[in-house]
Length: 193
Image (cartoon, rainbow, N blue to C red; front, side):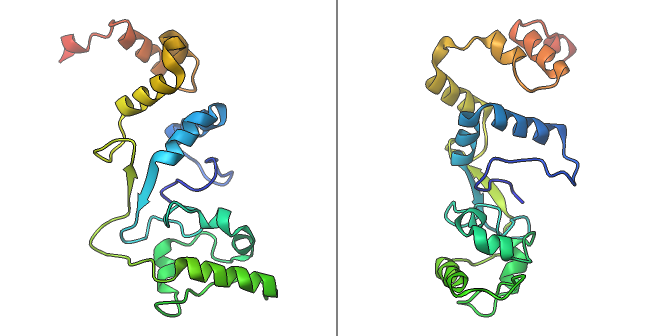
């Protein structure tokens, strides 16, 4: 999925992930306010629907269906389905078809009706555009380290030392050292260019 579900990201046991995603997850665990800033400014733009996970991603009004309908999610046999797959499995333009692992109780049927009401007439997939992300903290819509740095300085103030930020983070040691050299203006990049 595009990865901005209604939870703090985690690394699944059964998959291998990049070092970058691993560092993002560790940063979120050590600094909840940074993760909250990320999640509150990240928006998924629906295009074709292939990269978006129906239950896990916040594709509909910044709402994670897994968090809003936890019982239905637990009973669903379509947990890993993309939005495109679920869209093609719909019964009609107004009703969505869901497959559950057991016959539902009356109160669970009410939850399905509430989910149907939430989803009714809201989605039109287009094959003209790919699924994408929007960074709402920047007017251009793309992520910028500069914008995040300004947010950090406004929220934390100038009391944080640059050296602490460079050395006390979850980046690999080589990245920390390279960042320190850049801060001290000791990188010879201009010579090599």
